[in-house]
Picture 1 (cartoon, rainbow over the protein chains, first blue to last red):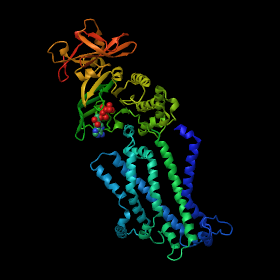
Picture 2: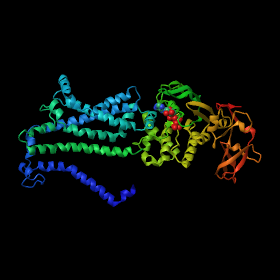
Picture 3: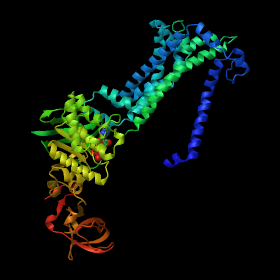
Picture 4: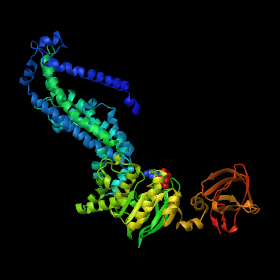
Length: 279
Length: 331
Ligand SMILES: Nc1ncnc2c1ncn2[C@@H]1O[C@H](COP(=O)(O)OP(=O)(O)OP(=O)(O)O)[C@@H](O)[C@H]1O
Ligand SMILES: [Mg+2]
């Protein structure tokens, strides 16, 4: 182990592989970013060239800023993603704790039922969901999206988190009970910190699909005030002409917040992993 | 007043009856050891006493009060687990002070009690460390410290030494004995190591299959076992059992004889073939065969006995124990 780590050839090979992978993964992002700063002609003439004094242009960003209420879309996407993630993690971890920790009748069945959603795509129920949202008057509100995304994310969250919570040692929870921690305190102050890596994983898994989703915003909340970023960007993609400058600029700006959220969660993930090694 | 009294306690998990009609008294300040083979229900019994499991039937009394429905933290007990069960995300100080914080003790009291426990266990240098940064023995001491700071009426130890190596185990055993003297609290200690049981206990409770086989002082149990199981469980090397027919023809009882009661004598009544010799310096353990029965003799001092040699072993008839076919002791 320590020998493999000390071996310089191995280290170089390992870093080489990782760097190569990073380059491949970042390449599309890079292409989008550089092209968002170029004129339309330059985009098509030399898609891989960096913007220079000739081809540099902010026309894309100007179009995005002028057309539509970009910041509102941005804010909507942010609200929907963050609130949905919060609910997924909150309800998911509470359900997972109950399933993992307590022996009660139907525990197994309940677990299976909650996991069922992993196999059934929620879009199958779109019509019923739309009817429900209409009936409750939630159409064209952000709540419609938040509720749907929370429902969509819960099955996998419960499944992953309950598996992790089962691995927290029984003696540890017993010790906490002897020490006088309530069940809530055991959940919040003992089990949650120990399954933080799993929480971060769940958050990352759920974040991207929610942020990128076009389907439900289009169906449940297409109004101007509730448009999300992905939906808002669609105005630049026409049936006959597509405003590539604007699309690329909008995408570039859409990547940023995801990156920020990802960095936050991945730091949690690493911190969680190291504290999990403390056993 | 009894520190703990269990009356007719039983515990079932579904259809499996793990504890069966257990009656035990622990006096104030007594050191009681539960021993028994793996899976006999020792940990379950301890968890019932702690309140981590509810007894299916029966009463648990601590300090004269029935605590069947009292949560663990208000029973006046503290527990030390086999796996230490330290909170991995808290440092040593916070591990030890958590229970006191939950009790809403003042900061001064918490600090004083933690400092006192640390002094007893030599943990002062480690207060800022996390459990992952401690050795096994240090972790075990922190776990014990976490129990001490609560100043419980009753300590519960569940095989606290089984993860430690032999030398450390002996030291920690002495430390626990010292703690018992210093604190004067009652302690219940679970182990399946009979040396630990014999050396620590005021009273030993031998369990088998969820039943109390016998309870009493170590020497009482050693000298006067109620049945073949207890006789075989206590003592190391353990007691030899032979059909009584070897000594008196037609006798269908089983005799038991302790290894130290066997001697090498010219006219010994048992002729045995030596299978193996363990030389411990002060003692020599001779494992020999009489027909298909294995016998262990513990001889004082050093002997030049070789494998394959035929020896004759003798004993005094007063040192024999007799058991019937069900393993009950016959006088
Ligand atoms: N939660 C549970 N559900 C069902 N059966 C259980 C449960 N806990 C313990 N048992 C059973 O109860 C019996 C006694 O278990 P226990 O842990 O008390 O044994 P033990 O004497 O402490 O053994 P060891 O010396 O190996 O620790 C075992 O047969 C075990 O399978
Ligand atoms: Mg046990």
